[in-house]
Length: 227
Image 1 (cartoon, rainbow, N blue to C red):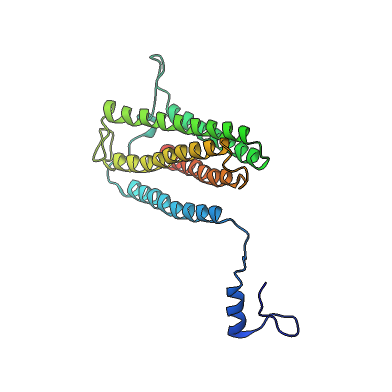
Image 2: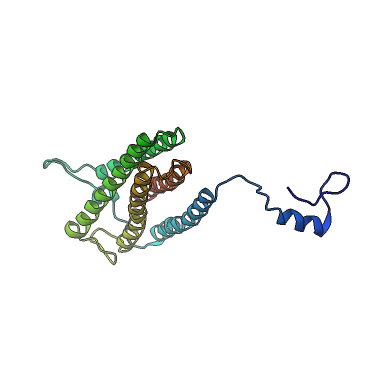
């Protein structure tokens, strides 16, 4: 409690009161440092992804050559049948959205102190994330090896398509890969009882990161694959 109290019971005014209040180390908002730092990181990352997407839109609107048709490039056939447009991308999107649900359940179980349920739900979320990355590797290999897409050109149209595609999806895939490692690290520390005394707020912090990664993919899916 600050000592900057006048004889009338109110806070002391002026510079002296300001110094005393500052020295009292009062907390204006009761937000843990871990959560606050994660929010700051996510805000900074939002600017980066926003720059990527705005840059993509600018290139697409100003290019003089036709933009490749995503429905043709990202079509996939099963068993020799007709190619289905964007089927792999739709599955990847479904997987990430589902992983948001398992992550939310893990946070709930953490606050209930049911750590084994939280552990398995975090592992399920990480498994979904690893599946997403695996599908992205398949997508990249198909485009590079079979379709001939390169960062500097492609046989479908505007040469900028390849560089933007690999930059945006690669940067997001890097975030998902880092998230999988982070989730597994948190999960095994939860299982070993590391947070039994400290509380399970770390699960919510990990969840903030994971939900952000999922939300960014929704924008990439909408702007890059559907537009």
